[in-house]
Structure formats: structure tokens, C-alpha cells
Length: 399
Image (cartoon, rainbow, N blue to C red; front, side, top):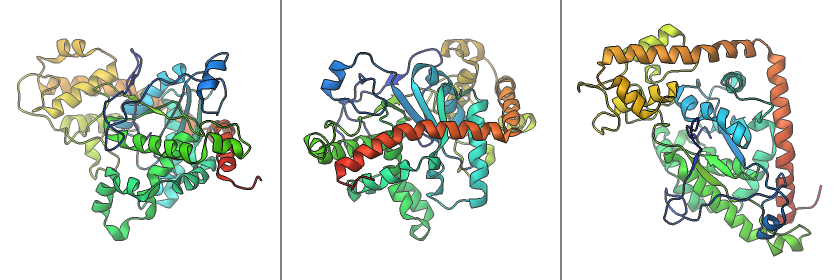
């Protein structure tokens, strides 16, 4: 998701994380496995369901990007570009996570404009609404309702240990931090669990959020699922599927143009630190020309003393679709001036068709509205089944 970015898988299948270790801290539990699925759209499988299912449906993947700031190269290469491949491999739901965009002070009049722009970028980058459901998070109200239900079973200590909350609250100061900054991981869990997701694209720095989602799912399953749910009139078994991580290979994490040790970020104060997808040619050229480099001879990957070099080569590798070996053979003897020209040309050539398509989509608001309406409708069908099951299991009076 926008907090959660995914893998570069254009020429090879995605990797499932299967780290060893406990369920606490940043590492994911060792029991992660590839799930076998039943053919029900929204039901989490039990062992009996798996055995009796006549055929397995496609695994489901959910992900999203916040509509704050401008979508940049890191969002694209780390997430959106790969969704184009994911939509052919999985059942996919890609949404604009506008509810997450208000956890810190934001520009209210700009939110709806940025939401539409982000949706248009999804489509311009190649997301096909006939293959994937594209929608706005707040248009499916079950996200917030399930978040509240999950919050009742989530210990406050689990949220207090979240690293991103500690970092952002320290920067913003207590008086400027709303409760939403503490509780947004529960909303993120709702985003995932609502759709009985099998796989969640995450970066190496975001596994803690998926771990929390798994812990919440297991806790609610234990508190209200199984025989307890059956006694309430339900089918029994698990209320939620336990999602697994879709981990990007090395190189999919795009770093800042001004600091090779920091992620490219919308929130960075300097626009020079990022390439925005809609940047015109002259701006891209200027940003690459001025980006931070080093004084070492030649160019090389994976030298810890040369983070900027590794970052720029990785960007060039992903944007061109070449292998690491091909990039090394092409670029290892280049100087920075020659390589920056090569990288600039590759970026402009790659982004120009996206920019043209974006303008076409934004000039037809009716088309964009129809895509978002259809996507929200499909998502709501799945979400309502999950939400109704949770209502039943938790003892609420039927509507």
C-alpha cells in the first residue's frame, strides 16, 4: 500500500517473505505460507473448505497509494508499475487511500483533486479497470466501520510500538498529532482484512504493519470465530484470512535524489529530491543534472559507500527493464555526465506516454467517475460479506 509498496516482477514471479522469527518486532512470523484458496469470493478458508473446493480462485492482492502530494518515481517504480503485471496474475483491488491522507494536517480543498489525479495516474500507468477494481477508499464505507470493530480488540500496546507513529509524532509534536496517527494501522488492517486478501505488497520497511494486521486477524478469529461464530448462527471457521507479504526484490526501493540513504518521499521538503510522474522534460533534466553523486571512478551497484550510485543505476535498470548484468556492462565505465544524460533520456521516454494518457483521462471526467463507481461497487460486494460476518460473530442485532 502507499504505505505499502510492492515488487518489481515484470520478468519473474513475486517473492513471498518467509523470514524466521517470532511475531513481534519488525520481522514477519515464520509461519507465512502460500495459501490455497476456495472459490468463495469473501470467505476465509478452513481446512475443510480447502479440501472440498472444486477449484481454486485467483489469489487476491490489495494495495493503494495516498493522494497527498504528487505521485513520484518511487511510488511508480516501487508500486504502480508492478500492478500492471499483478493484475494479470491475481484478482486485484487498487484503491486511493484518502482516509489515510488525513492523519496529519492536510489541505482539505486539495484532497478531492489529488484523489482524482491519483486515480487518473493509476489508469495512465496501465492499470486496466476490466482486470482490476480501482476505487477510492472512502467510497467503501465498510473500511471505517470494520476499523472500529477491529479497534475494540486491538491492545493499545500494539499501536504504541509502531515505529512510524513514534517517528512522525516526534517530528510533529504532541499538540499537532491527532489520534488517527496512532490508530491508522488499524485502518490499514481493515483495508487488508476487509477483502480477505491473500497477498499484500510491502517494502522491507513496512513489514511491521502487515505483522500487526496478521496479529489483529488472529486475535479476532480467536475471540469471535470458530465454534463461537457458529453458535451465533454463522458458518464457523475463521472470520479473516491471514494475509502474507509480497516482497520486492532488491532495487525496487527508490531513494532520494539528494540523499541515497533516504527513501524518495512526497513529504521531503525539497522537490529536488524526487522525480514526479508529471514533471515536464526540462524539470526532469534539471533534477537529474543536479542530483547528488560521488567522486569515485566508474559506476557500480551495491557499494555501501556509494548509495547514490546504486540508487541511480537501480532506477535506470527498472525503467529500462534490463538486467543488472546488462546495466553493469553498459555503464560501469561511464562518467557521471554521460550517465546522467542516458538516465534522463530513459526517464523522459518512459514517462512521456504516461503523461499524455493522464491528460486524456483528466479531460474526460465522466470516464474517470464511471471507473471509480464501478470499482467501488465491486469492492463493496466483497467488503459487505466480510462486514456482515463480523457483525454476526460479534453479536450485533441484524439490520
